[in-house]
Image (tube, rainbow, N blue to C red; front, side, top):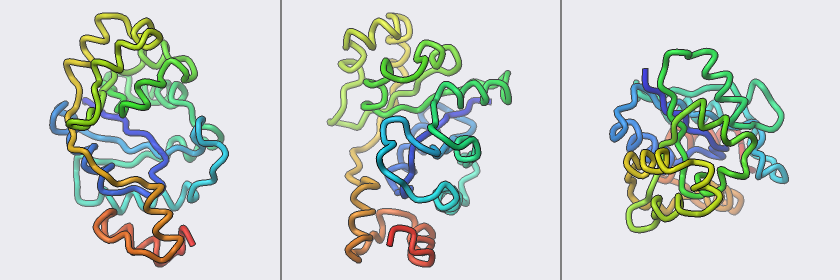
Length: 205
């Protein structure tokens, strides 16, 4: 099975996340896209997101009805700071024969040398790089010295050759939270079921 692992805070999940996931599923011929909400992101430890339970519930509502999507509670259940190398190690143990693809946006790909054990990450999964049409340039990003050295020429070629084209989507979780805090609508920027969950539970009040 070919599994795409899509990590992030998803605080809250929005339509942009779902569009990226569907583009990855289709273009990379993935059997499943596994949404993996973090417990605490290493680079965002100063901000307290919605609870892991709330984010898992919202994700479950968002992916309902798409058999190619699933949600994992692995990082939330583990707690603490969520390091990708730990998650992939656990995923590899649970899925020894599966083809694991780590879905990374351009910023995440560029920062990969700063992650914990990046070389080990590359041993555990291959990279699916997401490129927004007319916005990002994955080939240019992979030419940065530290990243190019980490990846090596063969892996760079594969990443550029398998990059996922997505439309530019001007939706950010930060903006949704800001709208909610002042009572503005987030209609159509997140699935209706997620919007109802947020309203019913006062998630970002």
